[in-house]
Image 1 (tube, helix red, strand yellow):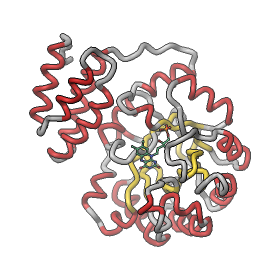
Image 2 (cartoon, rainbow, N blue to C red):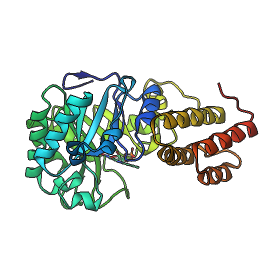
Image 3 (cartoon, helix red, strand yellow):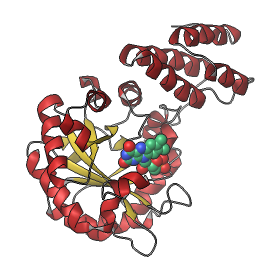
Image 4 (cartoon, rainbow, N blue to C red):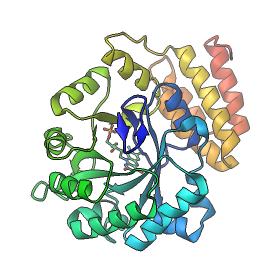
Length: 326
Ligand SMILES: Cc1cc2nc3c(=O)[nH]c(=O)nc-3n(C[C@H](O)[C@H](O)[C@H](O)COP(=O)(O)O)c2cc1C
C-alpha cells in the first residue's frame, strides 16, 4: 500500500489517541506489527506558538517510522503554518488533519469535527496544509457527520481527493454519537467506492476476525485500531496473523508483566516524573486484567505516588506470580 509516495509495510494502523499514543506506546505498537502509527492530536496554534508542551507531544524516534503527526485547528493559515513548522523541525512521514474530534470546546470553534458542518472551511484548512508541506503526504481522519441527518463523509472525501489529500481514515460515527452505538461500516464502503485514494476503515475492530470482516465488507485499503490496542499492543500481531490464516497465542501473564516493566521503564525515560507516574497508572489499569487478584493489584498501583513506588510494587507483583525480568 502507498500513501502518496510513502510505501507502507502493512496496512494496519495505530489510531491517534489523546493521552495514550505517546512515544513509548507507539514504539511498542510498531514492534508488535503496526504498519503506521500516529501521534495524538496536537493543537496547530500550540505548534505555531512554539509551546514546549505541544512539541513534547510529537517527540518520536526513527524506529517509529512511518509516523504521522495529527494536527487540529480552525484557522487555515495557522494549521498550514503548523504543518510547515513540524515538517521543518521533525520531518514526520505524514501530516494528518483531525476532522473527527467531538470535544465541544474544539468543535465550537470549527476545529476537529466542527469542520464537518462547514465543508468550505474544511477545504480551506486542507488547501493550506497541502501547500505548506509539498514533500510529504497529507491525510485526513474524520467522522461521518454531525448527526444522522447530516452525513457528509462521502461528499467530503470527493472534495478532499481533489484538494490533494492522499488518504482518508473514516471513523463512521457521528459527532452526536460520540462513542455510543456502532460505527456504520457501510459508509466506509461508500467512501471507498467514491474516491481513488486509499481509504482506511476505523471503528469497533476488536480482534483479527473483525479486521478481516471490515476489509471484506468495505473493500477499504487499510484498517485502524484504537481501543483494542489499549493494554494490548499484541493485537497488531494477532490481526496480521489472522489475515495470514495463522493463529496467535494469547499473551500470558508473564508476557503482560514483562511488558508492564518495559513500558514503565520507557515512560520513565521520556516523561517528567509526575507524567510518567500518571501514564504508567493508566496503562497498567489496561494491562492488569484477567488474573487472580488483578483488581486488588490495580487499586494498589492507583495509590502509588512515584515511579520508585511503582517499580517496587511491580517487583512484588512479579514475585507473587514467580515472573522474572528477562
Ligand atoms: C482515549 C482516546 C483518545 C482519542 N484521541 C484521538 C485523537 O487524538 N485523534 C483522533 O483522530 N481520534 C482520537 N480518538 C478516536 C480514535 O482514533 C478512533 O477513531 C476511535 O477510538 C474508534 O476506533 P476504535 O473503535 O478502534 O477504538 C481517541 C479515542 C480514544 C479512545
